[in-house]
Length: 323
Ligand code: PAP
Image (cartoon, rainbow, N blue to C red; front, side):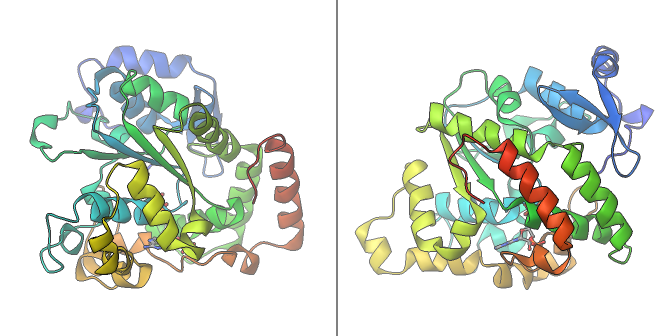
């Protein structure tokens, strides 16, 4: 997300109250000098914060809504594509598929972005189930869902790969070479827990606890397991969302068809993802890189790895989460 302040002409009438609330929150500055404020256990830049407050206040959930949640760079784009392909599989053929015409982020919008500046018209979102996404922590999403039994699917990923993926993304949107110095300062912010949507551990643990308390409505998926066992994980997702594959579908290769459609190499090479841009003018291609498990080894020094391993060990102690 872009962390710029909201221009005055885009601010809403009820912004003053929101702005006052935002300025009363604890604040700090991240590796880029962006001011972050702390809300319900995590840090957000002020533009995201405004979207979050509006979304918590104004979102009217429907019981059939599905929300894809993640810490940034944890597999969001892939999970969005898989979910669209899964829930809409009876509606489209391989040549009129929505994934051929738009990036997964265009098909599954972020709630905090929809509510950022203008009051969104949600009446034009007709398809059922409606698909949304979010990068906010579980407690913050829960409040916005107002006890509605929406299905929440969370994907998480190894912290080191998340960090390196984020660094690449940042350099790509700033259109600069991958600078080691930026990786170092991002690493510091990350270890201190002070990045937009961070701390990473608060975020992951919030959904982990949510999935233990409410397994019917919160599914906790791991990027690395999606990579090693995509077939099993896709069927798990289908079961959770109440759209199981029939025996005929399995026999006719429907599972593999969805996995092929949503593979990194396929999505990356679609014209829409090679040349298109998101509503915020980010190139679609920046969302597709290597998708390799353990790629961070090529960028982090042994000292960096050791430090982050120790932090993770401490923060995740007592959970059954394994990195
Ligand atoms: P976002 O939070 O900005 O939406 P997100 O999609 O969560 O980003 O993460 C991007 C990562 O997912 C990239 O990883 P990398 O930098 O380590 O390569 C990207 O390559 C990877 N990715 C995107 N699409 C897929 C896919 N279809 N299959 C596997 N990995 C994918």
